Image 1 (cartoon, rainbow, N blue to C red):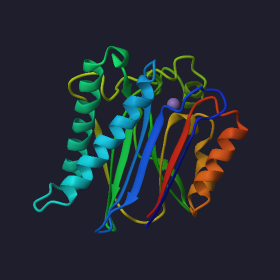
Image 2: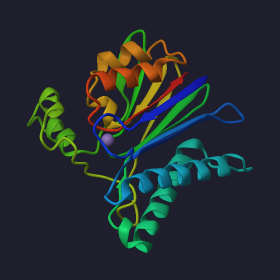
Image 3: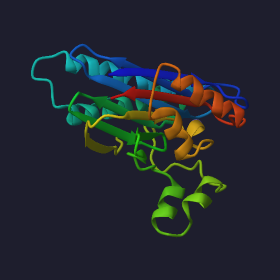
Image 4: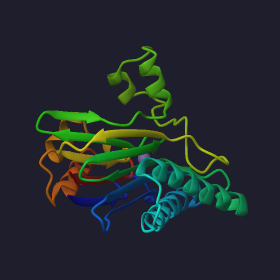
Length: 239
Ligand code: MN
């Protein structure tokens, strides 16, 4: 396996509130996490950086121990830990009140892949056959699409497409979704909405399915060509 990541402020925002970490761990597990923060007065970037750091710390700490929990259990615990740390920080500092972040993370072994998410940062799986989205967004427009009230195309330009229905750090606990797949090859993409809002699934697939060390830069270049109205983050895992 190989793993690459990139993040960029984009062309419009004054601060990068996205944050990511990706790493091939001893023992061969690939770990990737992308967070997209929200909240004024630096709250957004503090929330995403704090969540990534707390999440990765717990994962690596527990994975190194004997009797470590299975990866699905560990991922869900790491999400709760990250939620706790971000929420506590927001309670302790007036200027961070109300901050929060999305989180999408993957732990990949030679046999299986496990993905958790909160909010609208996404995970896709791509190979020669095409691309499919692994995660389901926790957003108003995703709910409207599922209820058949708007189409996927209408969702892309909906005035409230940024409204998320779940965020990490805004409450004492958070519900994350967990997805499990057999590792049958191809590539995994984790990204913030700054990428998925400006590129179609087909465009993402074209860059990601035969991933190499330039694929994250090419994804970013495409987003910048489209005006990059939001922060852009991508992590690619070659399975
Ligand atoms: Mn964003």
